[in-house]
Picture 1 (tube, helix red, strand yellow):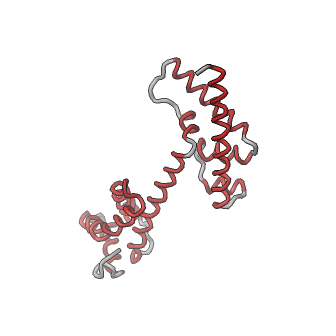
Picture 2 (tube, one colour):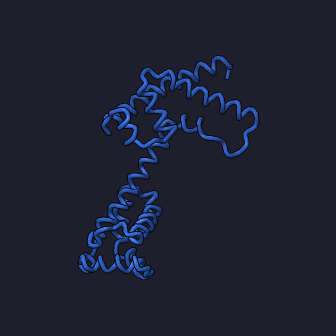
Picture 3 (cartoon, helix red, strand yellow):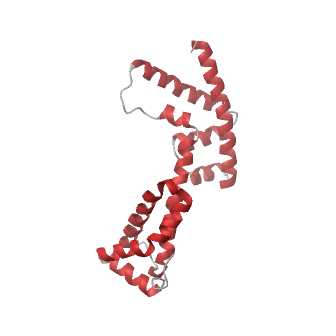
Length: 198
C-alpha cells in the first residue's frame, strides 16, 4: 500500500505525531501517501460507492489518529487498510439488511409525508399483514430472528449470543425464515385480494 520511502515505521510515527499536533499538511500528506491503496480496496469491493467510502476512510482515520486511538504509530498503513475494509463490510451489511424483507421495512417505516386516509388505511393493513405473517411462522426462533434483525435492527452478534447460534448457523436460520416468511406473506396478500376484490 505504501511506497518504499513511506514504509519506514519512523516515517509513519512522525506523520502520526504531526496529525495529533493538528498539522493540516500532515493530514494532506496522509491522504496522498495512502490514497492509492485505499482506493484499490474500496473499488475492488464496492466500485459504485468507492468515492464515498474513500472519503469516509480518511475522515475516520484522521479522527481516530487525533483522538489517540492508534496505539502503535508504526502500524499506520495496516490501521488505514483496516478502516477501509471495515467500511466496505459495514456498507454491504447495511445493503443486505435493507434488501432483505423489503415488505417488513416498508410496512413498519413511518411515512414522512402526511398520507391521505386511503393511503393510511392501506399502510395500516399492510403492517397488520406483516405482523400476522410473523406470528404464523412455525418456530419462535424464526419469529425472533426476523423481528429483531429487520424491525428492531439488533446486532447480529447479540442475536447469536441470545439464541445460542454461530454466525454461520444464524445465516442459515435467517435464510430459511425469510423463505418461509415470503411464502406466507404472498399467501396472505392473495387472501386479502380475494376478500377485497383488488
